[in-house]
Length: 128
Image (cartoon, rainbow, N blue to C red):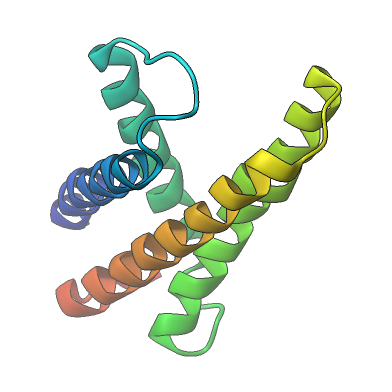
């Protein structure tokens, strides 16, 4: 289990980082000022820990290994996607238009991370 946790957290943080960098490159960095590198890395690690913990809570409930990953991604995305978009749109008193695009990109990235966690758990023989 310890081997799974270390690999899952580090690899998921790497996936999140690469996805974020790909999104920034595609957007040309149009979403405001940049945070310091430590905060960005810390955010990726925090998300990786949260996704791994959520996956371990869900594991075995989907019936098949890949469905566990999709359930993890879907539940995590609800909070990173629609809930965050509605919160930001309300706080800034603007429409949700620029944020929905980012939200849908995070759905793709979270789906990849969830499927990766499911594959890794299956490969390493992690059981409930």
